[in-house]
Length: 191
Ligand code: GAR
Image (cartoon, rainbow, N blue to C red; front, top):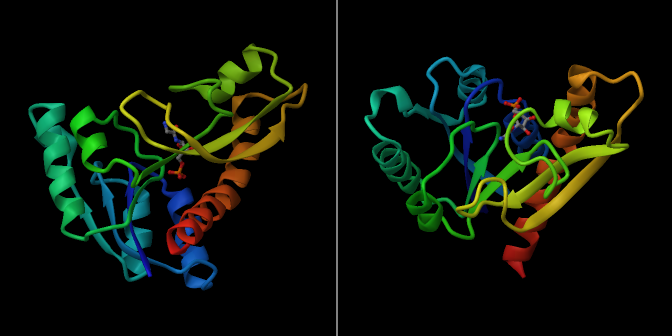
């Protein structure tokens, strides 16, 4: 089975969609651990209840981005994952961390990359007058929200959308997109 470690910072709804897909046997994956940089991430309890190992590496306890990333990398390495899945993990990662997991580090970003890298993607898409918006699963490279796209999902932007209604429409697609992208990676790995 393909081994995953999932990194979260909060709600963890994308993580839940991956756990659900794994439980339904749709993906030939083993979720080795769920790690969070925030002790209060709601997703931790869900993962724990699903019988998955969890750990917190609290970034506030580290003096630098480098030392936090080193600790996070060491924790991830204990599980020897084939892929490290960022699912609402809201920390910018050092080049050293990204290099260490090169080709194995995957992220979901709530925009049709290369459009709207960074934060507040839904508000920015509305302000830019986009007719279409969505989400992207991509390989992580040292450049923020750059890296080769694995799969994207599109949604329409409606005239009466605000950032919240648009975010909800995108999130619904994210929950289908991330398991589908992981399936693609797992299949390619098996080839
Ligand atoms: C998702 O919409 C994800 O695309 C986004 O945060 C949300 C996390 O929700 N990620 C980013 O903005 C990354 N920069 P979740 O915790 O419920 O999965």
